[in-house]
Image 1 (cartoon, one colour):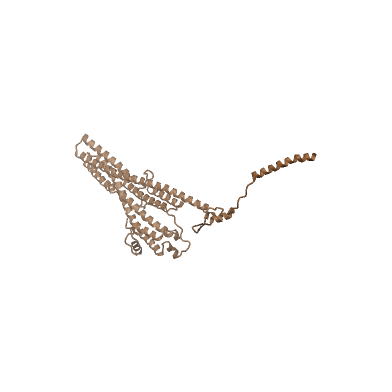
Image 2 (cartoon, one colour; image 1 turned 60 degrees about the vertical axis):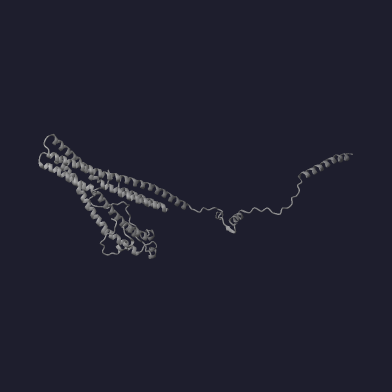
Length: 425
């Protein structure tokens, strides 16, 4: 009985279990999908992926991606290359700053040159008018009688002569015509330097040496043609004629320490014949052009010194003579004659711009000295690759002397040279 009850108790439990099992199977049963005609590709390994990306066919051509060839992505430019690029960029920036300074100097020298040329004209006219007026008053005082009119004429003439003497002393000291010529030369040379800087920037690949060279040339020009008068003005009456120097002093280049083949020399446009030709040109410039300009410069310097002393001395004598008018006939003659001579000397010196002529000779002498030093420094350079191209250098020398290449060669071939090297000056 007990067993029947136990089995009766178990039967409903098993039936319920079967029902639950069937229900669960119905819920989670998923029909099988048919097999697809394609297969999912396997993900390739990293090395395989790189090889496939490196070989991509486009229209039948294989295109290799160079970036993926080295998986470690090494940089193409080294630290030295980056440093060199930064140095070039900084040098270019410095050259642009120097270009602005040079352009400003061009304007300054041009404006001050016009101002000093006006000084020469205005001072010359003023002093001559004062001197001629004093001469007239001294003559009238000598003709007139005694009394107050005579005293007034004598006093006016003496004051005018004295003022003219003081102004002449200042004018002869600063030499306005020479100052104006200095500024004209400085303007031309600064314009030349500006063009050279622009060429360097256009060609590119500037270096610190280029910046240093330009800086030295700017400072050398500032020393050769100073703007201020007090304390920095050039000596207008040196003891001896010296050519102007507006370039940095050349240090002697190292001489050749090894021999070079003729082939290596000719690769840069140089040859033995060209070197001989340049040496002959230097000798002609030294013997004819430089020597002649030195002679003329010394002559003009002496004339300028004599006139600079004569003008103030004559007006001073005329001032004393005009003060003594009425005490004798010689006083009036001295006052009138000395005043007339002073006017003539002043007109010849400053109207003829003797100081400007002296500065012109000084500048021309400097030009020939620079030409000599440039040729000698180039020939002393033993490494022909460091020289300027020989054919280009020859053309520059010919143009500076106002000659063609054939005329330059002809000048160098002459044994007895009677003509000057330059046809420009």
